[in-house]
Amino acid sequence: MAKSKQTRNKEKASERISERDSATDARTAFDRVKLARHPDRPYTLDFVERLFEDFVELHGDRRFADDPAIVCGFARFHGLPVVVVGQQKGRDTKQRGYRNFGMPKPEGYRKAIRTMKLADKFGRPIFTFVDTPGAYPGIDAEERGQAEAIAYNLREMAKLKVPVIVTIIGEGGSGGALAIAVGDQVLMLENATYSVITPEGCAAILWKDSKEADQAAAGLRLTAQHLFKEGIVDQIIDEPAEGAHTDHGWLRQPQAIKRKRSEGNVVFGKIGLPGRGFGGWCSLRLRLFAAGCSSRSATNKLHVGGVNFKGVARLAVAISPLFNP
Image (cartoon, rainbow, N blue to C red):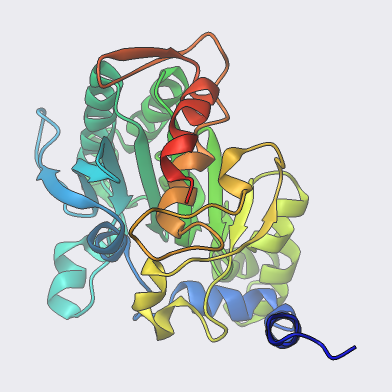
């Protein structure tokens, strides 16, 4: 019996996916480190532009100053009021200096937790985007309590009652990354990294030679694939074959989650958005939101539209009919 056109198309698509996976799986850990650092890789504001609407940025920690290395603000996500927090690097020399190369100071972390507490107060889910080589190690940052600011964020984020969805989009450098990465679900882009130290720093300590960074990267097990196996991240999000830097338009397209932990989460079904033309797998936008919707215990509360939902799992059930085709 002749195969239908639909069956042939599915087989061709499967072959393309297999070829792509073979190419990406052949990358070494240090290859992924280089991709995570690529200057054209999408940063937090690129995600904000493509995934959210009506973004309004907040500034200042109400103690010392504003820190441009961390971007915080209110936005709407499919009409739902949310809060977005993320580390921002610069595209050119001027911007990199202004953003301090994505290395936050204490006022940046204090601004972040101030914004998250506002989200908690008004029942807004929180999205954080991690992309930093690490917290700024300068004398001025240490004088203003860099370690205390990070530790305070870790404690206070653990107390938040609203869902927190963390996405590691580039470099996840040590405590500087962890300070905004305590969440219910941790997503990680395929070529992102997450580690206690850079490969160069590790090589300099162990072998007194930063040129051994490739060996250090393999030993640190800092890739999304390694961290998923260790249970540190919950989901891996596919990137374009050559990396996310090749096509920022990819952020708007439906993406398949390469690996996932919970089969029961509504996010993993084949759902579509009426009038959006997505069909098939749900978009990155919906996946990011629904990822956090099944993780909270039934003791927590979330207010949406005047309705008090006990537990975000119930919220997921409540909103799921809205996204059925």
